Image 1: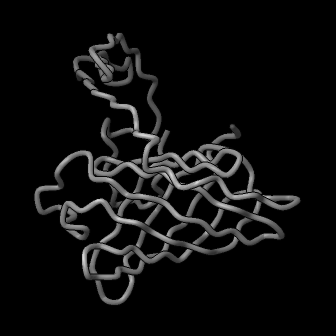
Image 2: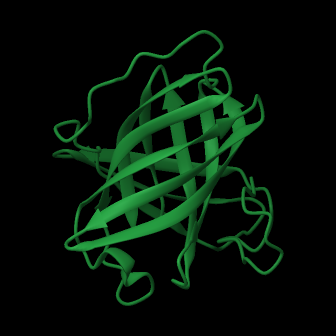
Image 3: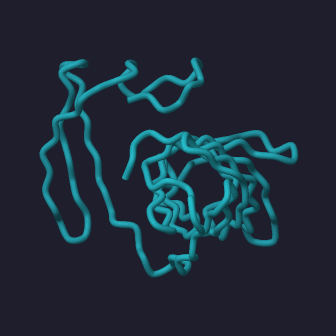
Length: 180
């Protein structure tokens, strides 16, 4: 289902909601899927999924009473400080752990939350070369620290990424799509 509210964004299947039927197989650590959707007959969908390495995950931080809700969230990122760009993706928040990704990056991290505020850190890894589309991190694996606020519907945060000798600031808006 569509998670990007920007009317200029064109979804992959040119419709806001689809049901994918997939068949897959495991080969080594990767999973290969292929299939399609009845909403767009004749259009093939292929995916290769690789598990996110847990080796670089920061330690899970303790959360206070009433912390941010576990769930699947859409993420909308906007660059700050005059850098043109942004991105969208999905993220799972669960008991202090962050796991997520988009078309070019995966993220693994940890957070703490209480009383409507949250903070944490994550590692951003480029899994597919962006080929100039979003070269903001230049292919580096980067550490990111963030802080912000949350409600039952989602969260906002400002973050700083350390990419080589550069620090890059951005804001993120998370919208809760489903409970976990």
